[in-house]
Length: 157
Ligand code: DQA
Image (cartoon, rainbow, N blue to C red; front, side, top):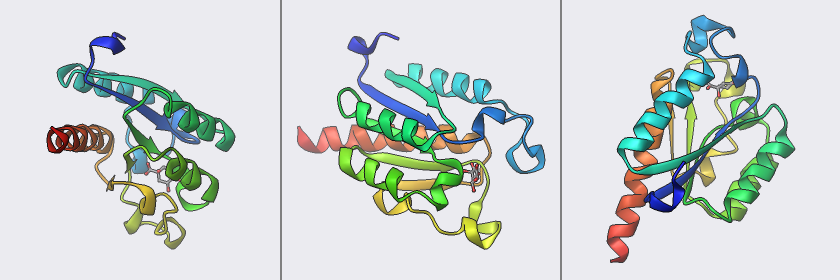
């Protein structure tokens, strides 16, 4: 990654159980693996002169540490918080604390699913949410984040 030459640096974070994509409930989450999603994000980032650092963790604290670290180097965050979406005040507070623009994504349309998935602790601290488009939620989310960063930059100059 040639971060110095890139316009934007983005942390991509995948939450718990997303390492099992491709195998995990394919009728809900599709057959595309996390590696393939990361590859597609990488291709899009290259077209947009953006650099990505990508991490997945099944541990809430590790996700929070990655968000804190991003303060030092990233312009924005793309996150699928997985089940922590619906449970984690700590993750929400971390995003709020670093004050980086953040886009929340979900493969599935959480609003068509069980009621416990309808509430997100993350949404109030996110720029926006994309859900229900399978792996494309990630690429749509990255496009939205980079467009927002471009716009922010244009409005400052
Ligand atoms: C998910 C939706 C969550 O409710 C679930 O716990 C996940 C994946 C999604 O991408 O659709 O792990 O974030």
